[in-house]
Length: 591
Image (cartoon, rainbow, N blue to C red; front, top):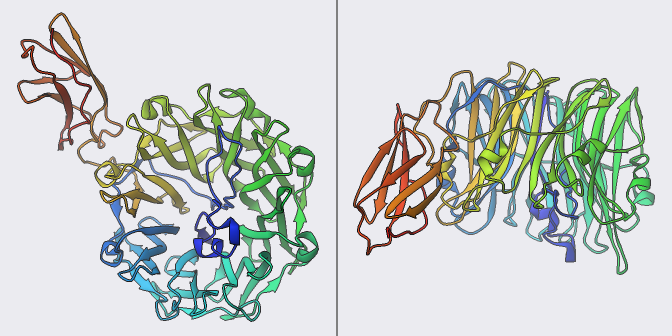
């Protein structure tokens, strides 16, 4: 079974939390004392060596009038994936969509649940696929009084049915919410989901459990002990991993903000022997978190009763520190600080972002640490037989980000030491770009900018939200970018055993220096070569006067007009053609 979910609770839920409206539930914490609440669970995955060129989800531009919202992505085999999310229609309402890839071809995005969505806020939140062409997607919508409800739709033999409402936890009143936030199915007629019930009159939220049996969804039940564990706060469940039909672990956080203090307490809920247990705090974490703030950011199970989880807490100095906790034989150990990350960068601040456990006791985790400049940089740390190794920086990141910040946001592994991960980095113009990196035989490759995204990302903000890989080693990726109007759009790409063939991205970091009337232009190679070697570079002076062609990354200009300040732009050429021009260099005058 393959499960995917959106990386944070849908914004419609956040709007029910009064003064906490818009409080971020996911983020990258290196270099900051702010903790993140992304509650993730990833399925085992591997990756081929290359990635195809990213494309916008077909048909989504016809539906989406302004901004789209990323959701989940699931791939069951090579070229067979399902994705969903939200978009803004012509009436400025938020609507849900679903899209699928069949044999390598993406269908047009299809609007779903519009007749239910009278209140104008809907999105696909989670998808679970027990097999190819057999999936269940769940999402949320609002009614005419603004209350949030859950809907599901099933895919059978590759064809999607109609959305149906899931029974609510209780009778909902204005701006209440009964929402499933994550889902796991052993068949299209047998699923379990977890989520939250929000009571707008008290501002509190409690965790609830949804169950489907023989195609019928029962009304959700409040988790045992929730009221005593969380008398006044907001409990949000965002992580669920079910390694078998009879074994599940869910996780989340309770946020309790009062006039005098704010606490953030992570918790687990375990399903074993046919029954859900009570909500319980993560053992030992209270002793680590001196400031009363901790967050669960990762949850993954390698086998029934054998899971790994992790997150971040604030130490006595207010710095973010990473922790891990293991379940062995159905018993959770005490949380431990991930000391391995202290050896990286400044050693002052680090955060665990995501974790994947492809087998019992064997996990890989990714995170961010603060370098000497305070910028976040990505790391990986591996666990073998329940013992964590030293954290290592992902190699080659500085080639992409020129010493600025970078962070991985998601990881997925098919076997120990065989993983794929993606994230975002800041380029030399302080734009956010998406990148991918593969691990083979415990060795990480140098990261690459996602092929095709430079031509899409006109607004300068791209990142990866989900990586989903099937047992055959193929992977799909879902991410976002901003267009020229600064609207968020969604892209997809797939791994491939063959190198992509396309023009490269533009050269970077172009600078010009004058020395005794001779101007020397320097630049860095493109972040992506398009899959084939760069054969030459063309440097153009602006205003256009001369062009220099070279195979190196430097070129000199003589005889330019000494009364004119020139800038320079560079394009790269490979066997498939010439790239776009780079950003202009600084202005310089021959003297």
